[in-house]
Structure formats: C-alpha cells, structure tokens
Length: 78
Length: 173
Image (cartoon, rainbow over all chains, first blue to last red; front, side):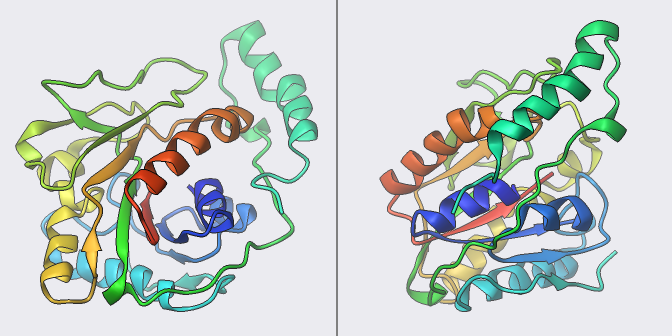
C-alpha cells in the first residue's frame, strides 16, 4: 500500500494510510502514514471496538490536512 | 520521482533471490525477499477533507460475492487485479479472497478493514466532504512489485480519476 500511496500522491491525489507493518511500509516512503501495533487482518482496530477503529481512522485521515511528506505517526494502539 | 526507485535492479534481485528459490523448490522464503526501498518521499499539498471527495482503497480482498469473481488467493505470484463496488454496499453482500491473513476479524466486523460505516458517519458529521461512489478493493498479495507498478497502479489511478477523488485512504490487511 505504501507504493500505491506514492503513486496516488504523485498523480495529484492526497493519500494517507495506516499500517501495522511499520518497518516494511516505512521503507517504501509513503506520503502520509500512521503505524500501530494492531493485528494483521484488523488494521483499524479490534472487531467490535468501534472507539478504537474510529481513533485510528481519524488520526490517519487527519494527516490529509498536511502537505506531504509527513513524518509517519506512531499510534499507541494494539 | 518514481513509485519504486531502481525498479530494474529490484526485478533482477527478485529473480535471483526469492523467485529463483520458489521456482526451483516451491519454497516461499520471505527472509530473502527484497523489500522495495525508496530514498525520496513524495510531496504534495494537503487537502481540506471536509471539502474533499475521499476514495477508500482496501486490501481486504473483498468482492461482491454474487456478481464478481474472487481474487486468486492461491497463486504464489500474486493477484494484481482490482474490484470496485459501491460504497453503499451492504456487508452482507461481501466475501473475502486474500489467502494471507485470517478472515476471522473481518468476518466478525468488516469495519476493521472496510470502514464504510465509520466513513459514512464522518461524512454525515461534515468531517468528510463526500465519499466516492465506488471504492477500490485489492487482494494485497503482490510480491512482484514491477507488476504492481505496471498493472495495478494504472487501474487504481484510472478509477480514482473516474471517481473524481481528491484524496485516498488506504487500508492494508
């Protein structure tokens, strides 16, 4: 997804992502990203935990207001 | 600025390493997989999301189970195709074909990877201008990054333009 985010940004579409794979995703240099310690297959939060999902989503979307590149933001979500 | 810097070199290293081992033994050894690395960060202006049209891109491998073909979740070479479906789709109409993550969470609560209810709520609250009519769904297992660049990126960009997206949210599985 880091590469797709780059492609979108390079084509005039502001892109943001969240990932539980900090190391791998950071190497690709995405324009905007949040990183968590969430589980594979549940990137926005635990099933049924609407509050956590919303926190991760809002933090990731908030980066769209900033000009890229944005230093990746690590969220305390696991 | 390139999507993947030194892509030709990446391909050569991939063929000599991960691909050569897989094709000779059938073993997928991710410890020797050459992850794409870039040196430069792409730049671009931020947007006022409350005035923007947002495109959701998810690699849950979701698809419309009655009208769309599932992704190929068996191949070792990856599936580089995309599916699009309306953001108004009921979760009951979705199934998932990825093959590289446990579906238990997304089947229990699709919002963990396909956050349509959350995004609709944020739109109603005025935090998001509007959602595009359709979202983009991918399988996400794409080890051949040159194929991602040559095949998937044009499909996603074409969809983004057709949907008149100003911004994109990418949610990997």
